Structures are given as structure tokens and as C-alpha cells.
Image (cartoon, rainbow, N blue to C red; front, top):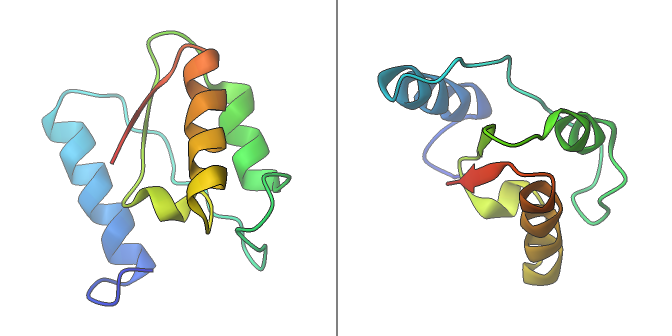
Amino acid sequence: ADSSLSLNQQEEAIRAWGEKQGYRVLPAVRDHDETGRTMERPGFAAIRAAARPGATVAVWKYDRFARNLVGQEQAVTALEAAGAAVVS
């Protein structure tokens, strides 16, 4: 996590940004007690399942998806393949 902001603060900042941009903001998704080293996490699976053309997935930092660059790229690619945009 960003050392300057708690997870709740990160979520609130993303929520505020999304609302300001005119997005319909859905509840935040967290993978509690799951390692970011695998893409087989319940929360990420839920995001993948909801990804569709016109959807935008906002993350505080790309490293919230995965702990390494390869995993981050795989996460973004999977969501974009479903038609969703990913912003950080």
C-alpha cells in the first residue's frame, strides 16, 4: 500500500475521482488475506467477471493488482481483453 495513505483513504480518493468524472462508482473490491503474487484471487476474479466494454477499472497503483511487472501487465491485459479500460 502507499505508505502515505491507508487503504480506506485510497478507496475514498478513487471513489471521489470516479464521481467527479461522472462514473457510476461500484463498491471497492479487496482481496483480504490474499497474496498479490497470484491472479487467482476472489476479488480479482470478480473484477474480471464484471469487466465489459465501457467499464473502467480504477486502481490506486498498478501494483495493487500484482506484486511484479509481469503480473500487473497480465492483469491489465485480461481486463482490456474484456473491453474494460484500466486507469491508475
